[in-house]
Image (cartoon, rainbow, N blue to C red; front, side, top):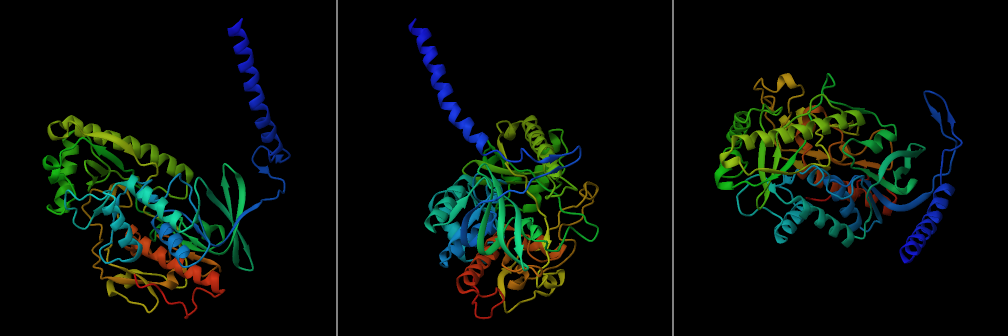
Length: 462
């Protein structure tokens, strides 16, 4: 009898706790009166609540977005940072690309992050990684959370930007979708750090895509591996004591020895921190970063290939016998996206001439890095520099200002540039600095009611 009474009471308690939730769900349902046909649905007009207001809204929490949000907040602006993932860092964290590229000549937040990674023992200090500043991606997540909290930034994770409201050629709101529903966020200034220029696209801005034929650089799915002895495999690792190109040749030969041919002819293996390595050894060709179907296919195929590569190395045995795949990236690495048309377009000539600007916001030293756009080109031996000899050059503020819309700045790889220039400035060290200046300028515009091109704005020297 006691058991029956317990079960009866437990069921009653369960029903009582569920009923209120079901009632709330019914009261908040939407779209039930929409017109439906075989090929499309017409949604009825509905009110979208404006849930947040800020001086500056930064869309995208990757390297560029982090730079923009933190600098805007430190400049006195009320800042909201919107990110679709469950953590910040973008390619650094979700993409498992735990390296700083083109960081040597950078100050500002790049230098600050490097110092925090070292102090927190998240930096690989056991082995010299030369030009690669490698770090533990989990440590980066923690540091970014702390920096945003210290700057009193309102961070909205698990939130997608799905639209924009434009009035008199000026963006006034973004539309978001999340578990909290469809909402609007108002701001005086917005910074598009989505990588693909999503906000600018929703505003109707014009843009370029890929090369002259529409071809884009491939995507890459990275993996984190462990179970390796550095002293035994160091001839296949990117580090300061060995030739980078030779290490790549050695690694692909080992993968081939295991009976597998990777899609990336120059695979990379670099130590993130104390026995954890990042493996970048595959390419997904002819995929668009703005296509859900392409991203799905690229992620599934890429993840499958990473497993095959690790299994191939395991078959080689010896120094590879204990290699284990710890994780694949939660977000496939996309090298390209929309390049929004700005007041100035960074071009190949800027690189070859080493062009400088009075309104410079970032000094780029990274060379041309165009990965093969088609699978058949991967094994031709063509250099990723395409034979273009570049010099250090500037990115001007004008390349961050869309020509078609007001109230918006660009940061990261979606700024205004051509296909060749983009392959150089797109790396994360530059994205942080571009983001910082975008955030700083956005704050000045929001707080002083002036346009981004105002000559009274003194740009950051970082």
